[in-house]
Length: 73
Image (tube, rainbow, N blue to C red):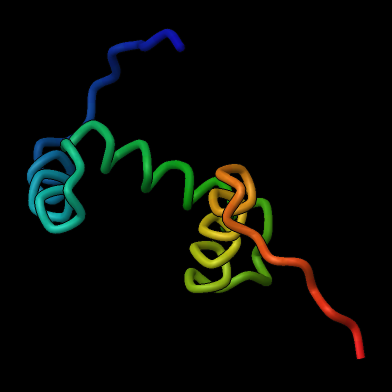
């Protein structure tokens, strides 16, 4: 993955540092996370934040093989 430098308001960077510490992310990764969530929310306005994070968690679990078969009935 390539990276590109962008200018971001210092207040956002400061907030990203704070939130990032709480979530064990760098400020850069926190801003990337916010951008990812924001894009998903914009593309799917009917989803809540909790819906989005649950879907992302489920996708990560499926990708890592942490699934169990569903038993119908």
